[in-house]
Amino acid sequence: MIRVVVADDHPVVREGLARYLGRDLDLEVVASVGTASDLLDALPLNPDVVLLDMHLPDMAGPDAVRAVRDANARIRVLALSSFSDPELVEAAFQAGVSGYLLKDVDPQALRAALKEVARGGDVVPPDIRRMREEAARRLRQASVLSAREREVLELIGQGLSNADIARKLFISEKTVKTHVSHILAKFGVADRTGAILEGLRRQLIRVRETP
Image 1 (cartoon, rainbow, N blue to C red):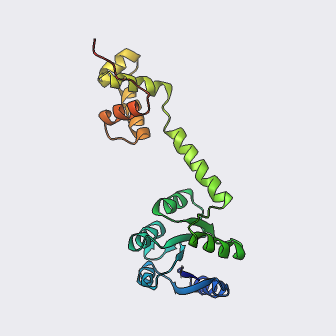
Image 2 (cartoon, rainbow, N blue to C red):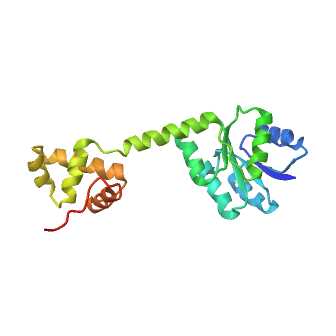
Image 3 (tube, rainbow, N blue to C red):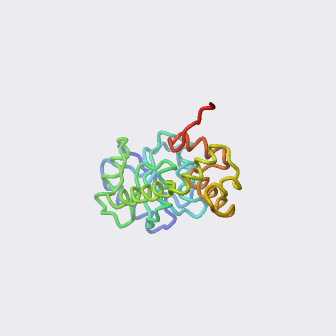
């Protein structure tokens, strides 16, 4: 028997889900709650899966996922949401959900998803998977340096100042500063040293040996 906690702030949805899932002989709804606080209080009931709405009134969905996982890493979380915002979806997976379904999901598919998650599997419908893949593709593109940015990075690696780089490339120092800012943002680093180290890691620049 798979023990389930339903967490949704809408009473009609919450109780409807609890009654529907309770008809399945493989599922037992041990609690239905409307807040993250009540959800955490229900965890001692040892559910196998939490069916979690991503917009609870007292805690953001991803934070609620982390709170459940921190309390008991054995408990699996299946997100059920009306929203397919890419940032919310990615935040939910980063927090530790085992699946993400929209509330227009077929009822039988919902039951099957709960059972799959309880078995240790992941549930990512094709539309959610495509969304995540597209977001990852955009992130990869954003992290790629332009040809000019690579030139600037190479010169940073040689120890040149912004003024030196500007003179060497025949551009203004303000333009160099803009390129440096873009490099730092794309690499996710705070300073020029971090940019050099990341450039080396990505093999975009090489350590020059001293003659």
